[in-house]
Every structure is written in structure tokens, then in C-alpha cells.
Image (cartoon, rainbow, N blue to C red; front, top):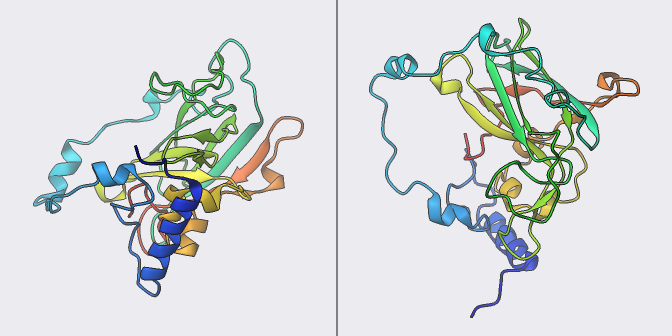
Length: 250
């Protein structure tokens, strides 16, 4: 039986890939990025299928509006009878297009682990406590300025079994619909100064340093609520050269 992969093995693979691709323009992370083991099993292997009628894709897309989102949907700390445990945070930002124009009235959804690093999901079985007062899901619509706002609990890091002693940095998943199919985006927001960044093959699959930094929120003290929550800002660009990177690339 082979020895389990260790962090040093993954670090070596990441370094080797970076050296081999030094100087290359990276449009998006490789879909079969070896250090992120599950991509070897589930990345697309067939040629991309061209959409012959892009407008037809819009006709079958989801429909949503103000009547579908309630005032509590963007506050993950008030969705249950009791208060969740953990560090309360406010995450605020704007959704923009490539020209810096606000993308108004668009659905923003989030999901995340709780403060102990566990998801409310039947397949998450690692030994961390579930919080009966925290489900980890929320949504809102962007305002006229493209702004969104969530109040939630800072998620904990969690083990994910990619290799021995593999831990994901704390992050929040974001899903955005944009104003067209081409602006559909699923991505992750990280927190500044996380010591797990260098050890995470998912984040390190984004080889462009500036693109990787665009995945990290900024702590802004003026966004913190006195005696209530710490404030983070994270703006999202849906398309163009400065776009926020998707989980599977751009």
C-alpha cells in the first residue's frame, strides 16, 4: 500500500508546476491541476460545446426578484431562534462589470462552514460541532450602486483529505447570476493574512499573483459595527481582464 501524500509532496508539485509554466500567460487555473487531486477525476475531458444561440440560454435561466428575497436572507445570524457561536462579521462590496459599472438587482448567494469549520451537509463528517443556530446560507439582491451586504459568522478552517493534514483556508462561497449568462460566476472569498494560503492547492492553482489577491477580502475598520461585528470589503468584477476568478477558472 502506498504512503499517503504529505504536505511536502503537494508543495513540491506546486513548485514544479510553477517553474514549468514560468513566464506563461495564465488565462485561468488548469482544469486538471494535479496538486488538487479531485480535478484529476472530474475535470472536463471532452471539447467545449459552442452555444449556437446565446440568447436562448437566457430564456431557460432562473427568474428571481424582490419578492423572492426576504429581509432576513442576508443576515445569517438571525435565521434561527438562538444566536450562532463565533466571530460575527459584516461582508460588504459591489458587483461591477468590466467597465466599473454597477450590476443592479442581481442575485448574490453565499454558503459557508460554521465557526468550527463544518458545513451543514450530510457528507461533512469530520469531528467538529454543528451549530443548531447556523445554517451557513444566505442571499440578497444588489442595490442601485451594485452593492451587497451580508452579516454572518467567520467560518473556520477545515480538513478536506486532499492529502495528509490538508486544511482549507477560511472562505465563503459566492454565486452570482449577473445580467447575462456570460456573467454567471461561482467563486470563493478568503480572509486577509491567512497562514494556510501557501499550503492550499485550490488557491495556489490560481498562478497569477494579482488574480489570487483579488480573491482576498480587505478588512475595513469603518465597516465594522461597534460592539457587533468586524467589517470586510470584497468587490466582485464579473467580466473583463480584472474579473474575479471562478472556482474552475474564468
